[in-house]
Image (cartoon, rainbow, N blue to C red):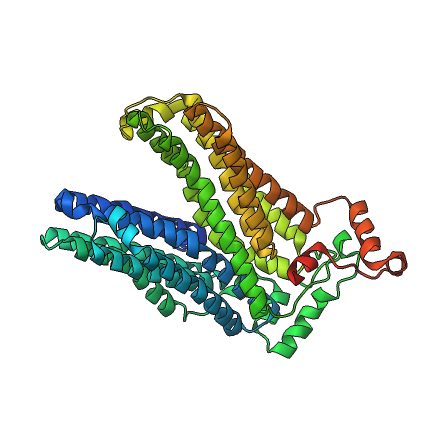
Length: 509
């Protein structure tokens, strides 16, 4: 008797590889491997004097590109997700974000050019061709973050992952070819590496023409709002905007999801609002970069007389922060989902989704702490080649700081979705201030490393968590009733008129 063929392992494997998290993890892995692979290729194929300027190019592109431009992707994702959820004009919000990003990009390039004598002398060994390639690379990173923000906002995660793969291959394959043909030089290898993000941005523009799968991820109400003409979109969204005050106690949207007691701000985002939010988020990302890199720089700077210990501390920081790599495949799908839920007033969904991702990060962080205690010292000395063996306790303390950084980055996505970019800025700045207070206390270098790596991220995480709970209504019902009386007055509260929610106030700001 003939039976239907079993889909088999091949079909199941294809289904697994088609999942957004797996695709994004694959793209991230290849992109990260391309950077390390590029350094390995040039180290093995060129004399040291020719290789010397290229690590400076590599690190400056990573530091400046991430610090100044990473916020573009998050803000573009938020703006596009919100526009699609509420039926607003997607091209308009894209234009706002590109115009604001252009000002930041031009200003960044101008500052880099102003510092060109110092940059070229200290990091590029006087090679001005490599400095020009730095400018090319920064322009490419600027464009790639914006393109990926559009793709992420549309939930085109397959296309998003393709841009990561393209960037990795565009950097690594030509470099290998040049090395194999003995044609590699400082300027040619540097140009190949600098052009990678630009090639990725172009590939993103091509794959962005694919149909938007946004409706697949949202319910019937959001689908109608995202695809209908403006007038119809307003009507489709009205069932959400006019939710009664007791909606959170059991009412539901047409798609079956619970509606919170919120009065939503569904107006299109203005150019000034977009600029202010981008400025705050960019400041927050910059402060976050300071929080991540200040500790190893300050501590190793105090160990100038013990270079072996300084190298061991720097290696330990790199080892214990490997857990941060899991953030990318989690954050890219998270932000558009949270933005749509927040725009539609589903604060309970925002809390649940954020809590689930925080739980994953805590589990990963605890696993990292345990691994650091069990095999960390061995990996540090045997695999990474550190000359000084650091204690397992110190490595576990550094891993605890990484756990706090993981959670803080997830909470940053939630706050961005809730239009609370000012909290992102204040929280990272609080972490930086806390860390520098630790630096001012007369402690030993290793004690300073342990305390600073925990205290700064912990302060940031705590402030972010409190604001997420406050804005999404994660408070006692009595507190929310008191807020009704405060904002609308006792008579209005008795009539059952809805009070402006914290989410609405955040959107207005």
